[in-house]
Length: 294
Image (tube, rainbow, N blue to C red; front, side):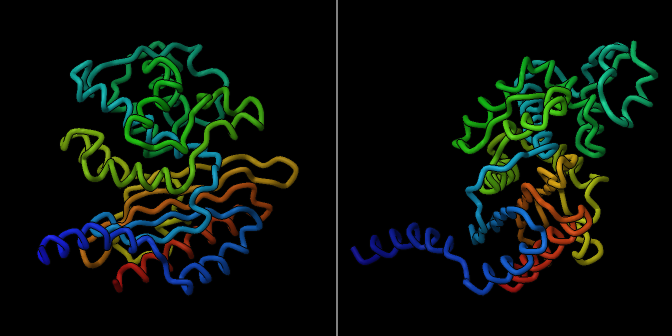
């Protein structure tokens, strides 16, 4: 009987690891003030469920961090053998109209070219390319398909209403593509634990995310050289001195070999983008150092 009680307690104890030291919360708060907006943080050690959050349930515009769940939805179809990474989508000249600078557009030779899913996923994730993103979304059907897919994993504070082109047409549209920091971190955790994709496609996307070229002044900025970070960024434009989103989310390999799932969203910041990015970098380093000592 005593042994049974002890085993039960083992299942109860992890619940209390969600409690966070006030000192860490307070240190995040001090840094967050610099962003002059709503800073939302969710961090979890994947292997032992140690958690810290700072306004983790606040809904925030994802901007291009939504490309991570879009990649998950596409790769799930590949897991189902509906197509392969070498499957090609035809890109027309019309598909290239209405976007800002695009690395993929330069590679697509002004349209009328067939592009593999592999290349589209890599452009979308590594370079945050919007044309590639919308081509993949179009193949899935519509953004609601992605929202429905993500909710299958018990993640509720998440929704995608618009693709990149439509999101950029009106300022308010980006506030319809939303997630809480806690929801995004939960998605990162389930992804890493191979609860969403096959082991092969989990490893594929994880590796692609380690090659991300955007956001070098965010999560990765202050971490020790050589730290492995698989992440996705998101950034909005400004209107009336307000930047709707400066975001970064990903999985960091700690010195002890454990993995830290971390989401930092900054919503409606009045600070310069360099200041917002520095806020993300400083919070990431603070949490990295704290969790590395645990």
